Amino acid sequence: MRHVLGISGGKDSAALAIYLKEQGRAPDIEYFFTDTGAELQEVYDFVDRLEAYLGKEIKRLNSGADFDHHLVRFNGFLPSARQRWCTRVMKLEPFEKFVGDDPVISYIGIRADEDREGYLSHKPNIKAVFPFVEDGLVREDVFRILKETVGIPKYYQWRSRSGCYFCFFQRRDEWVGLHDRHPELFRQAMEYEKFNDLTGERYTWIQGISLEELIERRSSISSKANCRTTRTWEDRLFDVDDEEDQACLICSL
Ligand code: SF4
Image (tube, rainbow, N blue to C red; front, side, top):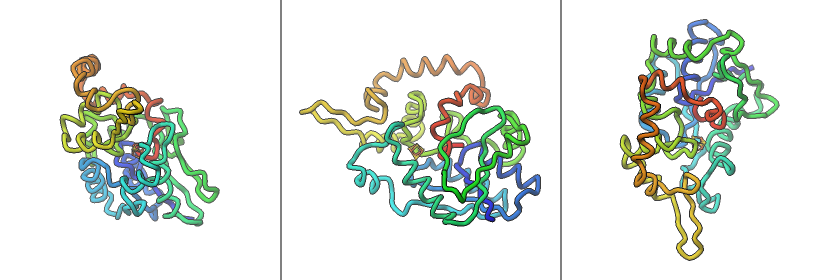
């Protein structure tokens, strides 16, 4: 029986890895990080820091091709919440290849204060377990664990999740944050959007609005975001809607 724990670069999986290590549970656990090649540099830096703390390799997995290659395979259709080929091809399939047909226990960082299943592998040889749920750990515990060890990933100051820089699950104010913090990545995300002047068809990351239009209207987005900013960024993270996170479990937990 193999024991595996997927590190997404997000807070919950990192805290779970640290928690299990400190508890001395599953000492033969294998850590892995499924790299889409489109993660933020802050995510890569955090995974490196976590690996150093754990004192054990976090195996980097990938799909064998970059996003652009897969985009061509999918006829140029950008992934979306309804056509979510990116997670299946760039996250789930490399994971399932990694475990093969071995019987596996997969440790998942869902917390006791959440009610979600998320997007998990359903291969019969993979059994998911939820130590935070079993032990009653909640969001405050996750933050405490991280603060006492590797720290909270800095991208949480402007973004509520890890995952690809162009992730369509990010909120509008997070796109604005990407524009301000990583203008080059924002520009690259813009280049993926396509417009057909003849047919009027538009292929945009956000339904109904292009990234260019988003930035033109940023003042209204920023002021709405500012309504949420009366507290510190760490406190604001507590406001993130778990419903919203549900769709992106494997990418950002
Ligand atoms: S982070 Fe977002 S864009 Fe990247 S694989 Fe996950 S759902 Fe797709």
